[in-house]
Length: 218
Image 1 (cartoon, rainbow, N blue to C red):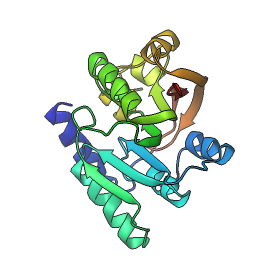
Image 2: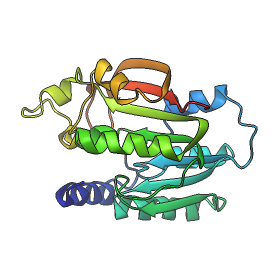
Image 3: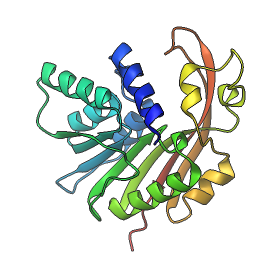
């Protein structure tokens, strides 16, 4: 990721300590609550973790979490929140570029990428997806949310209707593009959601894809 984008994220998390909110994604919550994980230790990878809203939920759900973000300010915010909440020592908060960090093979039960792979150019996104496939345990799951190419803010970046965060989107996906990118996984579910967002001091509309992809067991 380019340095100017990193600086933009640092500036955002400095002026918005709560980032994009403190509540975990309903997409993540619903999936965790519907699935039982019986193989200890349960390990999760949260890529582009921000201030840790999903990482904290996973930790509270019994996972040992590796939370990675390229923004040093986001990681500082996460660590401060963990200290204030007296969280158990089951979140390893790492400031790093997800595209360049090394990950162990067959390590994680689940991985999350909430609007991360749409923030990087397509070749880097493809390489990152392959890296996550390598790092998941056989049968492990990758929960992904990306901006759709039908998102009105993404499609109108150069006028006043675009939300501030949309300017970071480099790689919105069509459904076909997304399924192609995850062709080495088993696609367990997919849906395109259309919703109102009020995280930036005004209400605006977003369209995003949510996909659950499973690493083949063999």
